[in-house]
Each structure stands twice: as C-alpha cells, then as structure tokens.
Length: 230
Ligand SMILES: Nc1ncnc2c1ncn2[C@@H]1O[C@H](COP(=O)(O)OP(=O)(O)O)[C@@H](O)[C@H]1O
Ligand SMILES: [Mg+2]
Image (cartoon, rainbow, N blue to C red; front, side):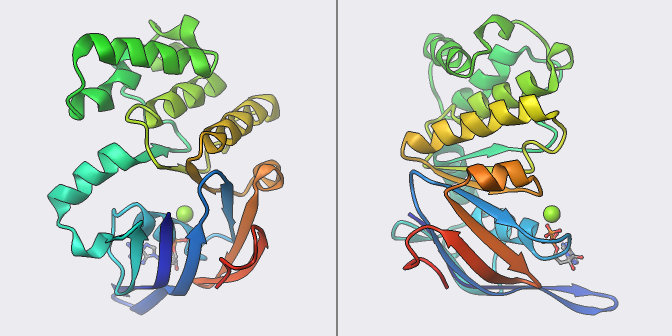
C-alpha cells in the first residue's frame, strides 16, 4: 500500500517560501481509483511528484509497503518506479518516432524483458485496451482517445502496483474521456492503486475515493472507509 505520512513540501522562491503541502496524510487503497481534486495551485502536482518519488518531502514520508521512499537513493528510486509505478499524463507523452506497439514495449526493454516477450506482452496490453489494430501506427496518427489508451497500456508494461494519472482526460472529448475512465477502473479492478489528479467531474464521479485538496491540505475524503482519512 502507498501511504503519505505528514507530507510537507515548501519551495524556496525569491518572493519567499511557498508552502505547497502542509501536512498530508492518506493511505491509497489498492483496487480503488482515488481522484485528487482541488483548485490550481492547491498542491496536487506537488503531491503526485512526492508520491511517485520524483521529488522529496521536507518533512514526512512516502511509504510503499514497508519502504520509505526518502530512504532510497536516486538509482534505486528509478528502478523502483520502472517496476512498481506506471504513469499516464495529460498529453500522453508517447515517443513520437516509435509506433504504438514499440512505445508499450519500451519500458519492458528498460526492465530487461527479452524482445519476443516484450512484443507479445505489448500486443496483449494493446488488445486489452481495444487498440491492438493500431499497434503499427505512430502516435501522431492516433486519435486522442487511442493515444491515452496506448499510454495506459504502456503504463502497465511492467505490471505496476500503482498507476498515476495527471489529468488523463484533459485533452479528450466526453466519449473518449469515458473510455479512458472505464480503462482506469479496469486497471484498479486488477488490484492496482490508481491515483488520478483531475478537474473532470466525470472522473471524480467514477472514482471510488475523492480527496479534496486546498492550500496544501486535504480538506475532505469522500468514499473509502474513513479509516484512511487524515
Ligand atoms: N518548483 C516550484 N518552485 C516554486 N513554487 C512552486 C513549484 N512548484 C509548485 N510551486 C507552487 O506550489 C504551489 C502548489 O503548486 P502545485 O503543486 O503545482 O499545484 P496544483 O498542481 O494543484 O496546481 C503553488 O503555489 C505553486 O505556484
Ligand atoms: Mg498541477
């Protein structure tokens, strides 16, 4: 289980300190989609960056099961991210010169999976998200919805425990957005922890747990069992 414990992050700026996170506690339940909602500047990206180990807290801890991410060096963190975390961004961030299938296979290559196995697994993941027929297409040739489904397939390449999505429906029309939401729910049904930063009410409606964040603090937790609230 991924846990935030007393997370504090303060940015030093020429204009003085910015208190981006002021003590965030939450346990992210596996098998559920957790939506993180809040106004611009409330600390959502900061929280996601800390949870994913891209940045380190000034106080508090991020724990993945028994491991405190702040106790791990950059090399081990990168290895841990590769194997245990998957990412989906607003603008899919697929590698533009690689076809969809090679994009999905790419993180497996980094993890040392053999070529044949990489392509077999990439095809199975594309199939799962209904884009197997687009495996040979470059990202620029895909629709927005297809691109996000390929990005989700890539996020699952190394069978991660946690999938992070930052505004995954932000660039999509409603119908494509619904497909991506359905796919995220399926990813959670695998038993994975899915954490989605979103402004999209449709995503929040489909989430199992919704965290509201304001001024670097969690102001409400809806859904879940209550015991995980701060
Ligand atoms: N690298 C940074 N340096 C200085 N201030 C930052 C930095 N990143 C974010 N901030 C500030 O921290 C606060 C929270 O930002 P952020 O986590 O990006 O919020 P959100 O994702 O909810 O819009 C904002 O006031 C933002 O301006
Ligand atoms: Mg942000």
